[in-house]
Length: 391
Image 1 (tube, rainbow, N blue to C red):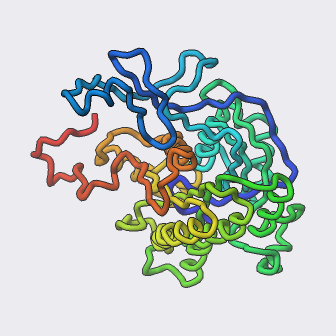
Image 2 (image 1 turned 180 degrees about the vertical axis):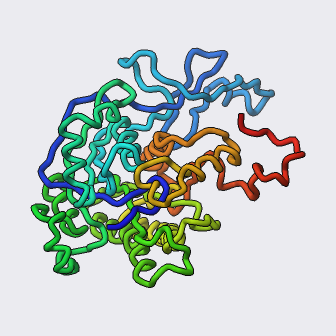
Image 3 (image 1 turned 30 degrees about the vertical axis):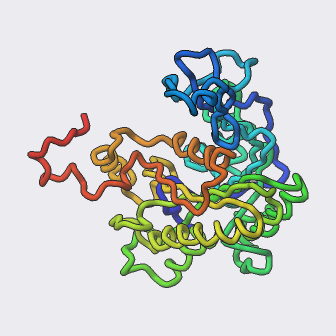
């Protein structure tokens, strides 16, 4: 696969039977509810209501009710042995397959870490040509610093699978690929074969993450993009999600969730993001809505996509101007800070959790609010306006 095209997403794959395990205690993110006048409230139920108290019920018919002031804020448990307060992101007992992890600095890795921190078991699929480097780096501990979870333990990757998501089944693989030395020694790496292997190894999964994209002509303007280059971008970056869902849905537990990664170029012009990649991201978002309906009705599976802001990952460097995109975001986004991969990972953990049980078919923007801007306020045109500028 040629240069990966999207900011912070990438193509990947890995060797069956490779296992990297270290025990850890999952860290659980939580929201709590406190009252200033009472020591505690009735526990917030999953049906999203706060139980009424008897004195309040008795007073409705006869007199005014003076309600205690309530403050909602983010909390962390001071005592690990105490019950979790509020609304925990608890993915213990869930199994996630993340397609598209080949290093430790992209969004796929960050999503894996956040899911692991919430308690999920992690399986990954890595692009076959990147397999040896990825597994060697894991084995030698080069990613150990990046594997550290909030509780100090290391993220455990239960198993790594080889995956090339542009091929649905062995019959679709051309001879030149089969004979390519980069694929030599790897078996069962098409989408269908990987899904079958996961079923054989684990039976089922609960979470499916699509964190891969590829545009061989990404540096070419759309007017200069060839038909083959355009179709390759669509195949690797959008249809690959359709294929993954098609083959993994049969082994996904009802109530499961799928997440993909998109980019604002799907709906707005990003000069330089070429080769059909903007079209591929637009297709991915359209497919998200259709798949949400089909997978929801037939399998009770939720389908969402995260529109992530620019990240200085190895994959994003393929577009050639990622640093400029980050600088532009710093100057123009409502939140003037550099987006971290962890922030996208945490959003994915929320979308995969029961807390997002009614969210499907959505494009969730995690980009410091840049998507909301209609103009670039760093333009000299706005020099005399009283607009906060970056320091």
